[in-house]
Image (cartoon, rainbow, N blue to C red; front, side, top):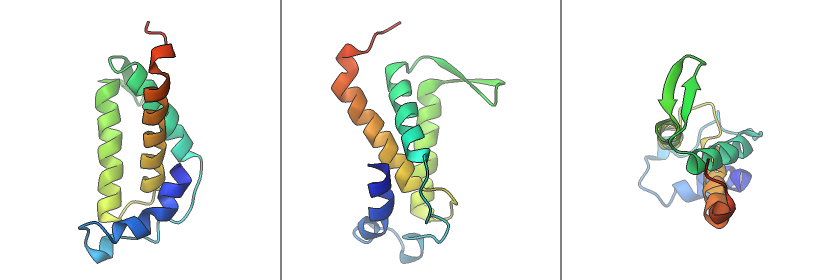
Length: 111
């Protein structure tokens, strides 16, 4: 899903109210494992939203806040097109993590 989102973003961006110069970026051509990583991170955050994550092993941040910041970073990167990362792949991975959580949340233990 993450790779499909990354590849389809230029087509979808044409239908959205995004300025033409921000629809594609030469920096967002490669694909890697980051979409899959975002799927796992999104699932973890949705499963345990009140857990504390230590950002840079120093700054304690609630998982839900960190997840919101990650999403905001990727949405901003998609809109402005100035990010060297595959933001559409990240968001696609996050969507997959959400879908997986919605499907299997009743089976997930709550500690």
